[in-house]
Image: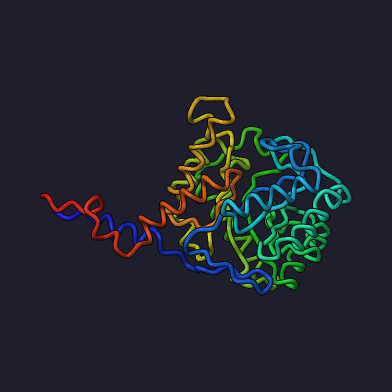
Length: 308
């Protein structure tokens, strides 16, 4: 009996669009894209305070690019559970000098601004960013208009509550259905406000108002989100649910499981991965591509069992 391994791989790895259009730049997605996390904050859960100095932040971004990141996501406000809001002027002070410097020294890199504030997003786009990564999915007045006018790439993420409240007893009847419905509504809102389909990426919001079982269910449901005809971004890097599954409080213990998730979720159809550990995740994608996307894989003996 012949297994259906190659057929299943083909079905799982078909994605609706293989290109993300961001302000005139076309980002190929078919082989997977690494988005490197650059937090210029004093209080982010994993790397808070490490890159507050603009020179250190730019050096970190360049290193991530050398390790395989095609996109650098710059954030000036921590969104960890319980984090306090940051004033607009402070967020601008933290992010804009880094974006300007990075756009000058590495114009080949695509820069993303991680913000919910339209004023910060506009300043970031003027400084050289091309993507708006909005955890509130365009909830702030003026953000959709800015994205439509600028033609910037837009990441629409699901979050239940706010960073201050999201992990206070989150509850779902059916997390996959509920998250999908919210993302459908936000995509429709974006389109109605002049944002083009090709600009939009969706993110189910791993860790943003989710229990451990919710995060696992959403990751397993990646093919269902892929079917929504928008590229899927996942951001599970170093998050606490990994430690809870593995029953360890050691932050370093979340490294390799996160790398493994990159390969698994690429197989399931996700195409953009927002990560801290760029080189290892980039290599995981390279190996996954070698197996999944190589046209010769269907002939490899370890994927086809001819014994009955």
